[in-house]
Length: 357
Image (cartoon, rainbow, N blue to C red; front, side):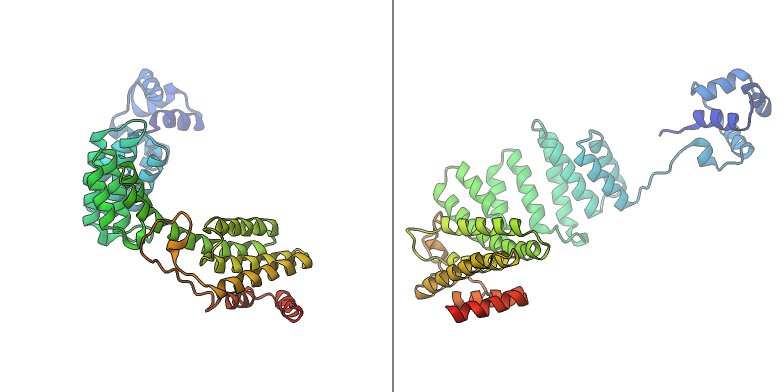
């Protein structure tokens, strides 16, 4: 424990305009004793420290110069996270102190499990740390009912724990753990990677194919949401670039030019592109994109295909229907998109476009 007593004695003495000799007379000690106190060579006895605090009219903690550390559970967890993020070697020592103080706290136990996992895999594998991490993760799972972090649940812990098993070389247990807690396909990519490394290419491709389909759906939602943000904050060029990327990504998923359900999503991208061009006062380009959106929609509606297994890079033997709520048909999706944008100028542009076409 560090204090600032030596420096404080010197500082407060000088503030009062006293010499070392005068201070020694006040407390009945030698000048040499005062010199040792101020240089940190020795420390006054407690009764003298109390007398000093009274003499200088200070509280004892100010006299000593000790800042009381906040040792609450929340503050302890925060400090542990800081130490881990900085890869501070003291993190391990502080983790064990925290575990002794809060052995039944989910937040503390989980943070410490994370610390041991991080230090157990940093630069080189430390099996001692990794085994300690594994032990703490199981303890955290027993305390999961205390969890109040919406970003953490049982599956997240099992995912992190499986990583520890993998680092320890127990791939079989790591893989089994991920498969048993793969709700909503959250671990499809990790499972696919592990199977691929084990040269089980067929099963690996199945998991990776499902992962790809899930990600495509997420990308669609992300792009549309980002476009609304970009367009309504004047970031038109970013909006245009992102939509172009989305359109090209969908085209890359087509096999031999055959219709796929992503064509219906591209109709939305093209409609949004028309809106962005209109906001940039490019009416001719806006009309061209609306025309392409309608043509793409009509082509899809003539031969709709909602089966994900027909996409390029997807290796599934069984049907995997893809669903979205943009509209019953692709053309209806375009119309709904115009309505949801809620831009009076674009609404009027759409009406005029329909009259002309």
